Length: 407
Image (tube, rainbow, N blue to C red; front, side):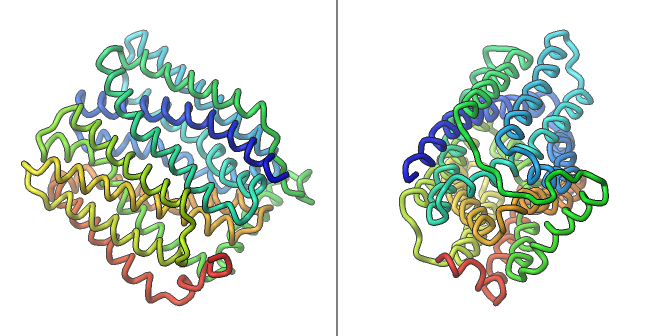
């Protein structure tokens, strides 16, 4: 029993590692293609919205069914659906139809698949691993994502230089096939759900209400959701604007863009390694608040730097990646510790929807704001707002008490 969960994670991690690298490469290749073809903050923002909004809309409902369905099969079907959408986009590019509308539609459909895959993956982890290993596993998961963030942009930049965008998309399909194949060797238990057979509209709404109550009845968890929503609202616009900051402010090209993506991944690898190797003795909430301050400060400083300080920008971005990885690992662990397994799929899906919907509203104004205020000023303003959230969080008693049971 002590080693069986490790073997399961080994198979899962191998498949996810390959899938994440290929997806990272393809996503970055699409960003390069859109940036070079259009050079517009609005185009990048609308692409981000297309990739998030469908998942946000159906996310809470997806969570209800994730808690009812076999989580392993849900992950496999979601990966397969995303691969099918990518194949359609690849064939369309191959036929010469390089339409923005098509890209937005396919990104939206891929988002639907992600709405099922990510919560199912997070909800499956506590069903496999011992409770005292959740933070360490979150750190290792973060390391895997970080390595893919390092290798992916380099592979994506190389691929878009050697191949057409249609051929580059095929890398994502190959990665999805390997990820699905790796899950065939793993058994993932599911929690006992008494109402599993019921599937009426009324029951779905009732299940959705249970997931919402799980959040609202825990004041600390509610505050954590609120502050995380504000931080995500600030992070997503600057994440979309990173390529344009590199291109327009620091006068870089596609390789400079890939360097920034890679060092962000290196920072996340370092942060994930620290969490995966060393088990922090501090409260996870304290760590989350500190990482908010560090992350916000790094983004604000990135916008404040002069145009000839690209390598300082590289260093600051690395620091931001470290903070983001540590924050994400601690946040996911707090949710996995505080939420009951039988409603975890609903809670994760609801969280992704709660943070994404206001973010979409912010992204709608990203292009206009970037043009009016300047890309670098957007980094400064939003970074400082994240710092404020980190400072204010220390004065919230309900939040500071959250998770101390497992510290």
